[in-house]
Amino acid sequence: MKQQYNPYDNVLKVVDHAASMLGYKEKEYAILKYPERELQVSMPVVMDDGSLKVFEGFRVQHSTARGPAKGGVRFHPGVNHDEVKALAAWMTFKCAVVNIPYGGGKGGIICDPSGMSERELHALTSKYTAAIAPLIGPEQDIPAPDVGSNAHVMAWMMDTYSMLKGHSVLGVVTGKPIGLGGILGRNEATGRGVMFTINNLLKKENRPIEGTSVVVQGMGNVGSITAKLLHRQGMKIIAVSDVSGGVYDPNGLDIPGILAYLSGGKNLLKDFDAPGINHISNAELLELDTTVLVPAALENQINGENAERIKAKYVVEAANGPTTLEADDILQARGIKLVPDILANAGGVVVSYFEWVQNIQELCWSEERVNSELKNIMDTAFEAVWEIAEQRDTTLRTGAYLISVKRVVEARQGRGVF
Picture 1 (cartoon, rainbow, N blue to C red):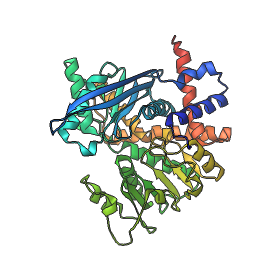
Picture 2: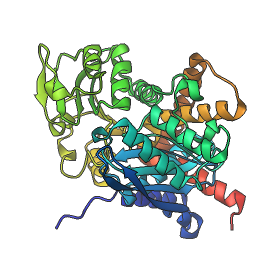
Picture 3: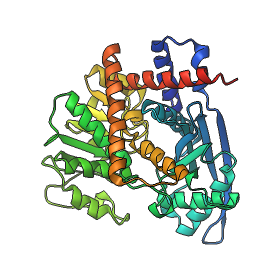
Picture 4: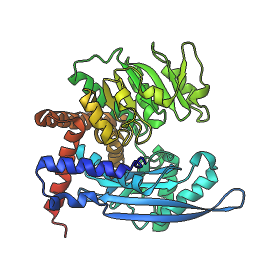
């Protein structure tokens, strides 16, 4: 019987490998293999039809050695405890590799937001916020949007937490609407960070940006903005997909037209049509012949079953955990270079950090400054990861973890916590 994929097992194996290469003894890094704090909550919600439904949710704080926990809240039917633990750990190492003063946290609610009314979602969000309120706060743990949640949800979370405290606490979450303490450029931050990463990668590999072919799996916030920004630079986006499937044109897609079609939030790509369009499955999309493949959907998309059929020259992980360790080994053996999630998609948490700084300092940055500061941090982190990977003759994923594990371990040792 095939063993069920567990994303947290992926995290543990990568941490063990990086710690071994760094020469750490087990006792020096063992704490990184366990979350500091985990909370499971239940939220009763009266639905629009008058029935009562009890939802389950989680909040996990993996590490606060380098600062407050930071991480999104996922609304999705597939949310589970191990997934949230893995996502929290990835946030710890993501914040460390780009060197911002945060630890890692993550939250999730088992629900299908697409089948819920706004009133039901508001009630669920408020109940969830109240349930995890003892763990969160601007100096403790700062949630943000993730799959299935958005700026509106963050506004509800901030409002509920503020009501409990008796005064407005803008810094309790990031990813808020601009009028409620949000920051210019946050909506595009993760996708923009992926763009900077792809630019840096192509530069290192002496490849042009103009005309380079790209495939993007997932047209949510991150995937759609990545596709838009890369297309704007002159790259040829030959395929994109959503939950319903993908569209493919080897001559390049009309990305502005596709984004306009999807903008209402009700249309799916399976119903999109235009001259030259071929409809394909998500599985087929991953295996297209392209220069850059950007998985921007969910975990476990490139795995031991399909890694041998990946034809991309480069994989840039815009999603969290889209590639399993088994697939990592196969891609490496085949000469396919992969930029890991904790580096490639860190743009969102970097700009979330800027938003938090604005909130606690009560000031505002221009969008130009936000994007400039983001580019500087992403470029610096990419250069550091590339350099150590070259020095150690290892993958970019291992290089990123060599940097991040070292920073977290040194923070814990320096603090002398217990």
